[in-house]
Length: 183
Image (cartoon, rainbow, N blue to C red):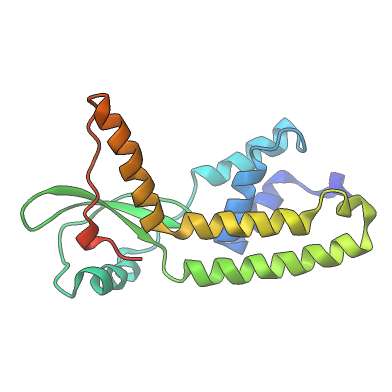
């Protein structure tokens, strides 16, 4: 009975699932055609309440991309379900923003989406009411979109294209330092 679910409990469950649950909740926050305002407000909390991964867990990722001498002054800026951002200075004192994917996120998200798709297939097979929402198709599309979102190099290329357009309007945007960009 959907009436038995409490938004706060569902949001806590999605948060406990991890990055896939958080992303799913963020997507559900946009579906006012399916959920009441109370539910949308609860799902919306998943947009801005993501705990950061300690820098000690992020540092090895930076070292694998930049080399062991990557030590600089990194100041944490923001955390999201897939990545975190830091402000830093390069050796030449150029100020930069560093975006780092959370450790293990790609593999975990892929496995979680596969598991959710299997569960959705069982639910579809057992319930015509659930089947009409086509959850398996939804989760396949959701998984493809997550994979694209995990590709920070693709995000950087898109930022460069937008920056090139904005440059024609006299608007300057940050440069991508490809020599420091890992996959």
